Image 1 (cartoon, rainbow, N blue to C red):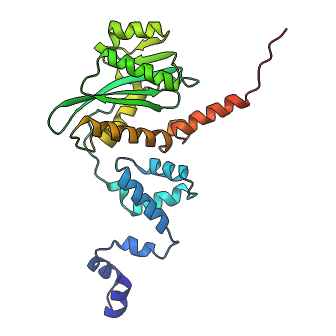
Image 2: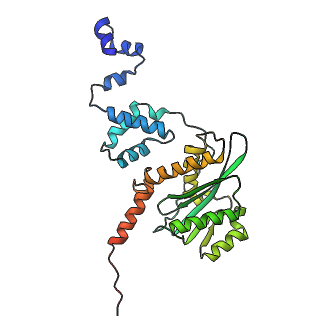
Image 3: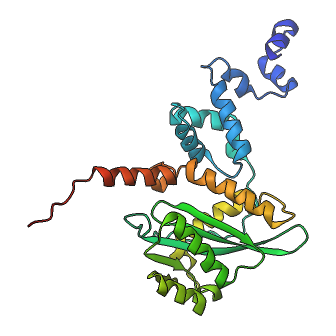
Amino acid sequence: MVAYVVEHHQISISRACRVASLPKSMYDYKSRKDDSETITKLQELAGIYPTEGQDLYYGRIRTQGYQWNYKRVRRVYLLLGLNRRKKGRKRLPERVKNPLQRPSAPLEMWSIDFMSDVLTNGRKFRTLNVIDDYNRQAIAIEVAHSLPAMRVTGLLDRIIREQGKPKSIRTDNGPEFISKEFTMWCKGNEIEIRYTQPGRPMQNGYIERFNRSFRESILDAYLFEDIMQVQILAEEWVTDYNSKRPHEALDGKTPLQYRAQWSLNMESAPTELTPY
């Protein structure tokens, strides 16, 4: 349209772009190499994951097998104005980073924590989030109106049957976690409890970061009429988080890719011979 107006009406490209409500940078961009597929992919990711930014989009693109380099993705990202999107409200304040020591293998340390929100009818609900600190894998998100200690231990029993048993669990000093039910369950399963200090949430920093991602992507993004809707979306999000969302702390791999790499390394490690 811009080219037609310039050619037939003898006006400048800048004026024609204003008439067509088209940024001049977009018109000029057409003369460069064709990035239509990159544009389509970034628009798709921005629609599905509106709270994520350039680096995560680039990681997802590479995970999906596209070979575009970082500079190309950044150029198109800026061209589309994705760096100027308005950010949604935040419920968790920014905190000073205090890196935790990462476990050396899966099942060494799980972190667990509660989150709370409300349905459209005003009724409150909670989620119990469980992750493996080694590869940041989301082990489970359980949604319910009430999550007493007995239900917490029941969920952990089910997870252990499916995933294996952790050596330790890191948690805060919430009433469910200091209850006799929970502490006796851990003792009976030979699982060490590592409590964080009161008022020091970043001592459980891995799950704090996980909770923030879950809140931005799900709890703050949707209005829920019942907890079944929350549970379904939570499970879909967990699948995406584990299999498609790359992590900078995991060398750009997804949690499942990082776990698979660990398994491969263990298989290829030389076997230690036992002396006679």
